[in-house]
Image (tube, rainbow, N blue to C red; front, side):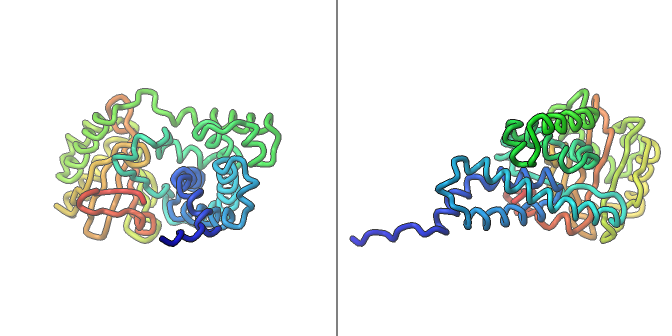
Length: 301
């Protein structure tokens, strides 16, 4: 029986990279808020890994996390310039993991990602790498080309900025999805009383159409205005929304729907049993990564 051919360098690079890909995409996505950009960064990291003397790398995971972080920082600089001319509010691309993977996620919610947007790129990197992905400040220092004390200060400043974005009274997943389902039914029927009962007095609605699809150009504040907004849509477009899946979206309870003009995701921040923020993504460019087969209604690939 002939001996199988020896693995090629490409085979070796792919085999060592594959187990790390999911984590690397998470790092890049948390940095950038864009699935497409995260996947591009990770692909670039793979090409660099292929050209690297891998035998000399003692810690492939740490090395590749460093590469992905540095590439993400470069992308973030140009991405922020693009967002200055973005039409309407900007929201991260919705990340919807298969149910089997939800336990592997982190505790970064969409609300927290929006808070991270207000940080400098270095603060964002230090916070994510230390508080979310568990890197030491010595490792972060090598990644950011700063000394460990400076990286510790970056993470501390970031932590202080985002503290308010963490829920004071987190809702259980089961309760959150139940509220999401009730909100979908109330918004679809236009039941003003039911909508108002679900909303906190200071609720804020944010819609992201990116100039590609109809969406509110400014956030809508207050339970009365938000309830009337959804009731008005239901009145003008009855039965325009079909529920595909009620799922966790970027760590928040929400749902995916099929609208007359395409897919839409809705994520809800909930405090003390009431909805305090509603995030709707309608920009088709941000929904391309969603696959919706019957067996798995919504997933991130």
